[in-house]
Amino acid sequence: MNFQQLRSVREAVRCGFNLTEVANTLHTSQPGVSRQIRELEEELGIELFVRAGKRLTGLTEPGGHVLPIIERMLMESSNLRHAGQEFVAQQNGLLSVAATHSQARYAMPVAVQEFRAQFPSVKLHLHQGSPKQIAQMLIDGEADVGIATEALGDYPQLVALPCYRWTHSVVVPPGHALLDAPLTLEALARFPLITYDTGFTGRSRIDEAFAQRGLAPNIVLSAMDADVIKTYVQLGMGVGIVAGVAYEAERDTQLRALDAGRLFGINLTKLAVRRGNYLRRYVYAFIESFAPTLTRAVVEKALGGEAKGSHYEI
Image (cartoon, rainbow, N blue to C red; front, side, top):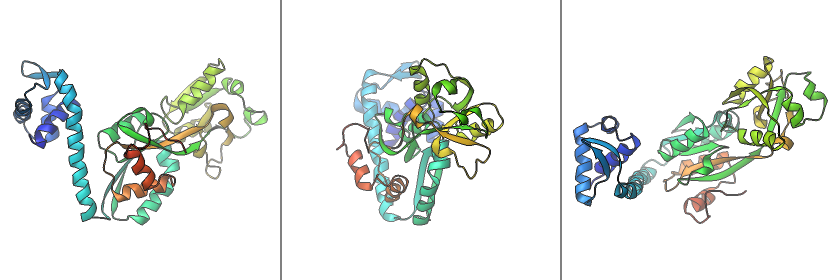
């Protein structure tokens, strides 16, 4: 048994059982991949894949049982490599952070600045995506840290820790009618609305609030980030609903903001890491810079399973 055999099995599943794609991913030949899989099956005494001729079409029942073990073995081999690198290069390396646009644009800059000052030789890669994409990047090992408000707590492969609470704001041009009276859901429902795409930045709370009052909001445009929403509000296309942190009075001079926390409730942004993943010292440092309550001791306790589940309260 060797790691190339294990990688061949894992990538066969990840690539939808397309051995040509597996070969490209592993920089080898298709016959080589087939041989690695067959040799592992012979050593284990079971067939891992369902076959139609020479094609793989799915996992067998034993294959489905063995796959998580293979994934754990490969993750631990990666952890072992990282542990060695930790002592060889204490101040060098790569930190990969995946976040939504709102987090990257409004919540992370101070933490990134502090991190760069503390670890100038560490390269920082910032990936932006939807919460589901962020979760998948963590699961696939493409990111060390993920930050989002939605979805991260829904995956058993991840440990999601609370960072900070926030509320939405309604943004309108100066002189808008909503500025002259108490803000209500009924008042908002009378205007065309511009807000986040489903699955982004607390959109679920917005939808729930209207649904609970039996209202059907007229959402004329949705987007992944607040900058786009604010741009179209300025053009007069509708009333915007954005994360409160996304409104900056000194920059958004053509807009006015109304706090909507009473209407849509409090949202909780979470930071997630993959269960069982080895985190280098500078990863812990970045996490604490972003969320001071998430000290190394707190994160290690969560990763060690001392706290039940993947949801934690501040």
